[in-house]
Amino acid sequence: MEVLERVALIRAHSTVGRIQVHGLVQEGARSLLTPDEQEATAAHARAVLGAANPGEPDESHNWPRFRELAPHVAAALPDAEERPARLLLLDHVRHLFAVGDYEGSRTLGASVSDHWRTRWGPDDELTLLARRLVANAVRELGRIAEATELDEDTVRRLTEVFGPDHEHTLMAAHGLGADLRALGRFDSAVRLDRDNLDRHRRRWGDNHGRTLRAAVNLAVDLRLLGDFTGAREIDLDVVRRRREMYGSHDPRTLFATANLVRDLIGLGEYDEALRIQEDALPPLRSALGRNHNHVLLATRNVVVALRGTGRYAQARALGEENLAACERRLGPHHEYTLAAMMTLCNVLRRCGELEAAQSLGQRAYSAHMERHADPWHPFTLASATNLALVWRDIGKVELAYELNRTTLRASRDRRGDEYPHTLACAVNVAGDLAAMGDHERASALSATTLPRMERVLGEQHPQTLVCAFNLALDRVATGRQDSAEDAVAALGRRLGARHPEVVLAAAGRRLACEVEPPPT
Image (cartoon, rainbow, N blue to C red; front, side):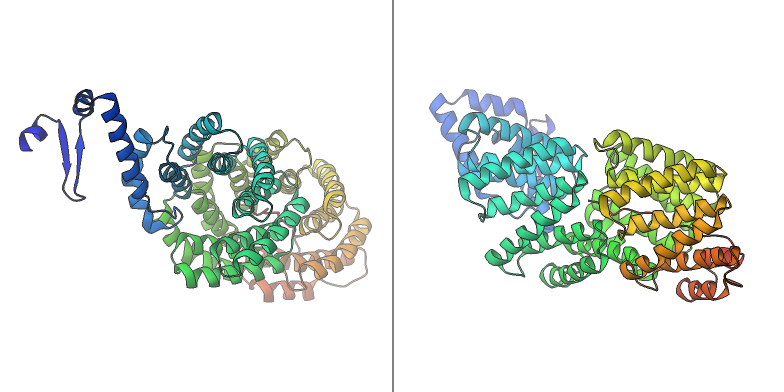
């Protein structure tokens, strides 16, 4: 053994009880076997590998075994025909996705699915499962149209072959719902995901991991539709159940926690959101690494919450770090990169760094216009809203007004008058009118917007209080009111007297509403 190691023909891994044999030795050993003996030996190796599959690739305690099996999977299994070996290939594709290696998951999954499709046809069970996994990886890499095409075909075939209530069909529907969300088709996504959750509950009950995944998807839809209360109700239940099932530091529990934080941000509960996410981020980083998509998104949560609580310097530093990480990991045009860009733009505007904010805001807006076939995708509208705020602050008031007015009209057409982003844009249009000296029209728009915000967001939501304060300024400007002191006091009670926005309000400065769209 020592002699063989000395000449690098073998390598012993004593800590795991494994010996690695040089490729030349392997080839020499194979040449001593007859073709029948080679096939029998290969079949035995595939059987051993199939039996070694730990299964459950989402379980982090199985990840070390998958890492050990990885070299053998890539070398011995692509042409395997035995079901256990094929299942190990699928589970390894899923494992790569779970640990954030989306490129590796897509590459292996596409190779396997293409080979199997040729060998067994497009309706083969495991071929369809492989295509579903490829679509998941492609989506995470930002290629939404490709993922949608894969998912639509896969769901259709699974429904025809196995039926609408089969576990394969139900799991594939998760991906199609995510595609619809990314395309901005929120209403279609919520219909699909609500039906899918009902089917999961009938088949597995409320406390199954698959049912909880379906519930998470529905909460994402509700959050994107502005129903933060409904989303929070679901996410609270999912966090509780996953904590009981997997523990507090399991990545699935921490991911659900990040979703709950997004609900709290949408509800204006910035302090609670910050406290929860700052506690949950370190174990999430420890479990998945700093560059996993879930970690990047949770980090953005912290940036948004820091801005909401008035801690602009901290938000700026972390926002710059998060954007740089997203660009390195995902590229400049990925949904998550553009979201991080919008978030940092909003922070920089609050910090008074208007040139830098304008540069980022313009980049995000232009990239969204290029990324989406729909010129008024919800995220494009969000980036337009944020860019217009910077333009107004920088002195381009008429330009800001034209962009805001166009955005408000498009948002009303797409989502209606009582959608949170529509309301935020209406607040900002009123601000543009006031900046141009048209206080009567600003007052009229603020007066119609405020009761809608009270119904949708609640009377004590920070953005509702911003609208109420701005309306008070409008009424002072038009001679209908003596002062805005009561509105300033209400804002101070909600955010704290030292919050920068409260300080600005006390100085008589009009406030605005940024938009932070949650991820799909």
